[in-house]
Length: 227
Ligand SMILES: N[C@@H](CCC(=O)N[C@@H](CS)C(=O)NCC(=O)O)C(=O)O
Image (tube, rainbow, N blue to C red):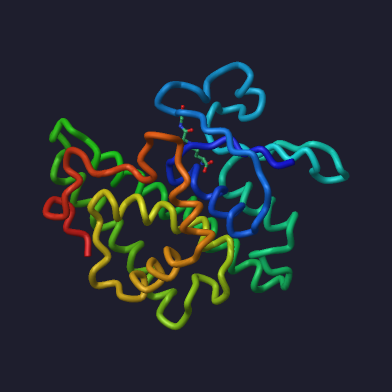
């Protein structure tokens, strides 16, 4: 049995999208990060940092139970377990891992700042910071756009690279980042959203919770003229 501990954030959505795309059965445990539900002693035994997401597979390697944390590692684990969405051919596999890690190492650090400042209700974020985050965001949007110029998905065929990168793009878009000027990125964004597994993975939510956070504070396209 697969047990997923998660929440509605972009990191939390990656494994839900993956499990839905793979058509696997799993138990979903929502842990409200805003109520500190990830900080309990029981959960810290599963995820040493006390964060979501984490996956427990009672039928792991050698038939033994295994715990997996870090969203990208969960994607890789599930891909290796099922043989889906991560090529075995060495060159194609490297490319998928590169674009998967591009999300974690290059895109997320900047887009997470965008999210932080876009949701800042104090209005005290210095313009120089907004300008810096905008410039770095645009560079990353252009990278996606170039990559997708002649492909439907980041690595040609749909893969864990798309599942790693897409949920964060949904969040920043919802918070006011526009993709105008990046037509290939927009086409991919729409193509991803039209996949039933991705759509399910992005919309399943605990009762009364928004599937994706809405803009507050400075999350306005006029203040964030990206695109
Ligand atoms: N690099 C980690 C990031 C995990 C992460 O930042 N989780 C956040 C939600 S998106 C969390 O659990 N925050 C709750 C807390 O810090 O207490 C991953 O991709 O799994």
